[in-house]
Image: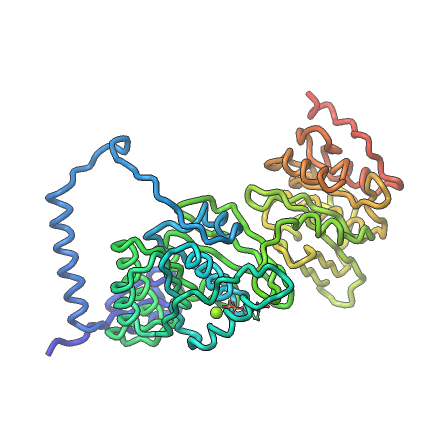
Length: 482
Ligand code: TYD
Ligand code: MG
């Protein structure tokens, strides 16, 4: 009888080793190697496969210059959800693997179910494999998507999707082989189980094997597969960093569960840009694309001390968001620094620059900074907004807009010497601000017409916090004007 083969796989990075180590040789994490047993027959099959493949490659192809490689334009499959298509780079690519990660309850199943419904309605064969929920549960959700009288329900075709509630990988592969759908969603990859591996579903070895075999099937038959994956508490895709290497596209669905806004971002995309982000709102009746986000955030902006509008870039799109700060005397020895929607280290840096170069010291105070609406902004252009919001909060002076009724917008990166640095796409940011009635946007030098250009943080504060804040252009220092 053939004996099982034992390998030790790291649950962090997926490194495999025949022996057990206390410390993973791959990622140097301690105590992460877990023994996995592979049935000898499947190990043998893999080894044989490898031999065959090597032989085929050797006899058929010689290397050739890239210019002689012929390409065929692949038709994308539109999911009928504009924001999702955009983040994907124009729709799903046949034969590709997309990993969709996000914390529980964020709306992964809802989004995939809506997308499949639209694809099914457009005449494509689809399949929804649910390992987490029973067919009845999935139907109940689909009914919520369909039966919403208040909105032209974005997921109105959800009930047309064929479902397979299954956790056995072989059964899923059989179904894929016989039905050969154009698009398949596996919800989730952590629930499928390959019978010939001993690990529990979701274990590193299982997830890798499941993904590997599904990928083979997807490539052979040109099926576009969306794998839904869980994320760990600290936001990384659970365990399978390895998966990120295998798949073509990694999407992250994020947001706070208690708030309606959801952001979809591409972390990796072999068929498109990773700069794109899509904004959704979870409503009764499914996820609704938010197309007028700037208008909403500007209308809601408070104009109180501590509030400023940031003209940010979300990928290739400008987005106006309100950044709020609160500076309060602290009772703690180590005052609190709480930030949401922005990078913690950026805030620490900006606070240091404020103290050193602009005379706004918040050393002994608690500082809270928040992007309103639960949106996350991850770009250098947010520095100035953090600085202005904190300074305005610390001094108790509101940032004046061109008119008392409008808030003031800004963008720009801060250098360590207190200078304001140019950031990408100033013209688009300014245009977006102007479109929503915000003039004299505070911006770094060379930003373009319509900007209230300032060269240093000090100048920015003088312009923003002065009573009846000036809307005229500040004179640039000679070194920059030259
Ligand atoms: P779900 O897609 O099941 O999340 P995930 O698959 O990421 O775990 O979404 C679950 C949440 O979405 C749940 O809290 C209910 C909410 N929801 C709505 O608010 N409206 C709806 O129409 C639907 C279907 C769900
Ligand atoms: Mg789900």
